[in-house]
Image 1 (cartoon, rainbow, N blue to C red):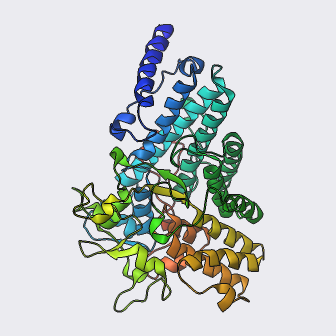
Image 2 (tube, rainbow, N blue to C red):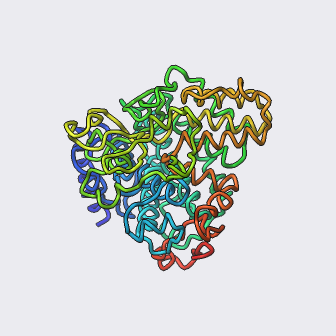
Image 3 (tube, rainbow, N blue to C red):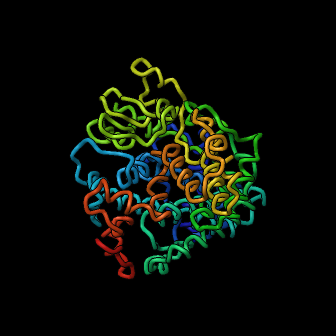
Length: 483
């Protein structure tokens, strides 16, 4: 019976592979739901019999990426609206209690948006673990392909663990497919999770190639893994290591350079280090569709994530931007529903007749070079390399059309320079992958910043609740305080 199961599954997988290999990389003409319907191998299946060649292994690897293609779970838009409401970036102009609870920092443990992210993140982590174990057991693959695929899977597992630990705090650290272990797993400390991230990303960088495996900047290479590692080092307070990794990326000028403010989301632009292809092969992204356009059937719900008045300013409130900051005029705009919206992504429908920007080919951008300058600036400031930190910050300010600190305040103190870094991070990275929420928390500024604008905000609001469904399934998990 075991041999029959193996034979049936292997032949089914071969059929899936033939279909997948006919598609452009990661941009399927079928929906992401179809991509997600790949069967999990039976527990008795020998890994070496699944990965019979490079093609079978690559198809399984693409199955990990498929979760990121679904716009409703692990994408930048989903992370950005949750954390943007939790922080001080976004407001929500509708009456859905499950969404308003993020803005009001009044989450409950059975919030569907919380449980959906948790479920899909851990489902993808399991897939990554399965691929890693299968690859290590495989004997028919070329060593080059095996190294690249393991490196990608390690990175994808690390990426999701990074977001889980920053949203929930201590989390189950899942590094195997052993159900008997995973189903009884307790929460691992934040420090231990970060140590695992560091180890996995270091290994990933060694295994990955410098080149992107295929056209576009969709598959993971050394620079992608290095981008996450530099951020991890920053969050860990490993300043020298963060500076070193960021420098390696910044110095790779043949592949990466700063681009015009209006171009940061364009397909394959040189500032982009890692991008996602779009759902259903669209030119427009979920960010463009909902943050700016408000044009879909979900316009009565998800399109109303407007920027807060105390971020963009109004008649009575000042804004977060300095006078003359080109980021405000380039990245902030009144949309067709008369809301002040994030305009980093401009294409929002499939019809350029209603919006000229819909002819732009945009992709959701996860890592870009500007963040590396900001990481290095903060790390250098912490290391008391103030002149070098100023130079990195000025690289960001120059593009924004602002006066350079080297000219206006060359003797700035370390404390004031770190404040300046946080200010630049706020106006450079807004509505991108949770940066503001995480920055406020990791620097200890969240409560003092948010209690002014959110009634009753306290330390219990810094973490999202562990989903109630997970607590019921695993009695070894404990809930975060305050829920």
